Image (cartoon, rainbow, N blue to C red):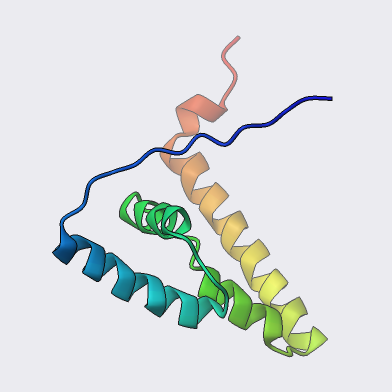
Length: 102
């Protein structure tokens, strides 16, 4: 049997910074409809800063939406066409990389 330890650290914050974080924490808890801790909040904010924002509130909204199968099929078709067009553009732009040299 293995023991798993979570390592935590303490960081110093000014009172103003903690108040700002608390305000943002409450906003995200309302959006996500669940409790968050400061670690989760900081992860969300870092992801947003680094451009890795997964927008969890949008995923939750999408999950709850009812969409017809026709619309889903059309969306798949549009995405497939876009992917094909992007590949054609890349192949034209970087054609020398795609051609085999003998």
